[in-house]
Length: 75
Image (cartoon, rainbow, N blue to C red; front, side):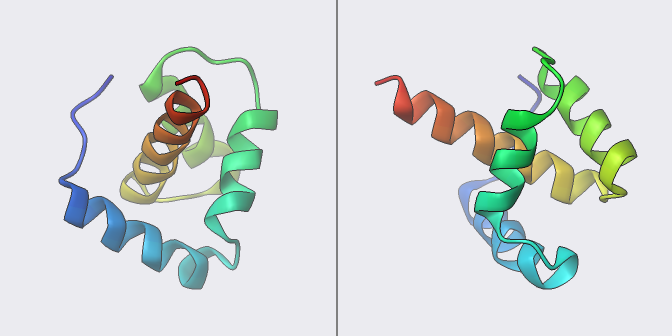
């Protein structure tokens, strides 16, 4: 996985995403889940950026949160 943001930066980005995009984080998680079956972190980030016109930082934060939640489900 690509280098991630600090926990504080990650949380700050997540808190700004709904206001910037008009969509809640849970909606973005479903978007990634329903998107193409990409296995690499950077592929998912690139797909979000291209398909949904997100900045690199927001796309990276969404994919990182997706991976965290996915890992938590499998514990």
